[in-house]
Image (cartoon, rainbow, N blue to C red; front, side, top):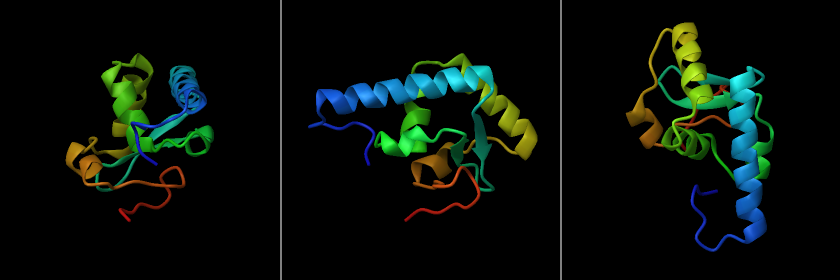
Length: 108
C-alpha cells in the first residue's frame, strides 16, 4: 500500500479521498483518535476503513498534515498530552507503524 498510487483507477482515488475526508470528520468530532507510540510514531484509532481503501496511517497523516487539518492538529495535541511524548517525525519517516490502532508497533 502506497500513499500516492501512480496507476490507480479513478474509483480507487475516489475511495481514498472519501476515506481521508471521513477520518478528518471523525477526528473533528472526536469519534476517532490519534495514538502515539513509545518511539513517537503515529496511528489512528477508530478508523476502520483506511486499510480497506489501501491507505496506511502514515499516508493519511501526511495528507491531513499537508491540508493543515484542524481536527488532526487537535487530535495530535490531545494524544501528546495523553502519551506524554511528542510525535517523532524521524520514527514516522523510518516506517514505524501499527496495524491495530496502536496496540503493537513494527517496521516490517
